[in-house]
Image 1: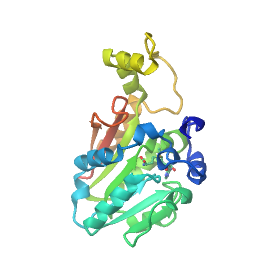
Image 2: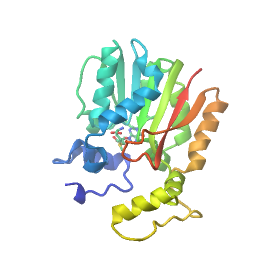
Image 3: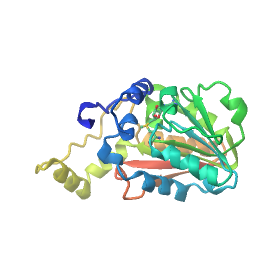
Length: 249
Ligand SMILES: C[S@@+](CC[C@H](N)C(=O)[O-])C[C@H]1O[C@@H](n2cnc3c(N)ncnc32)[C@H](O)[C@@H]1O
């Protein structure tokens, strides 16, 4: 099935369509070919847990923005339930409909941050916010600064915002310009050719180093600790994606 899906240039509305499409796996519904995600979700969740101390809080209140419908949000919901906490999910109604319901699971259909009533309810109340493989879509079709600022306002003292799996085009170029990247490209294509790496190129709607480092600068200027952190090496795109962790002191 994955060969028929165009995973390029996905948008919030295209994700809604994917969620409604019969016959797709849950990986495909959230925009990934099966081979990128199959058997990897536990490792992704463990990597997130290792980075986010806020998820260990007893009674932990978590918010996941763009949970999609894979096993990751289910793992997060189970994790919060085991600590006597709760989880809030914001995504399209089509995606949220595919996630299990339970008393500790709150579903907010909408395109974050345009979600009626959520900010009134959760401002200053959240231990842990997760947006995994999501901010590239907000960067391309929304207002990333509004996304960051409004998310930070939801955190309790000690709370954390984790923006994971960020595709960074400059990180990708650094990788494919390296010996390891060249060898990976040759193995993948089966051809003895160099990957194309073009540094001085306008890349509309794509996140690069300037955006990643700009998020850190803004969060730090607003009084939050902020770091870029590498992904575990066994994660599917760790050679070209990275994570940002922001903590309210
Ligand atoms: C690539 S999928 C990632 C899903 C999940 N986090 C994962 O890693 O398996 C991106 C998800 O973000 C959602 N999304 C994109 N923009 C959003 C927004 N502004 N507000 C809420 N959800 C959004 C999409 O509907 C989709 O479910």
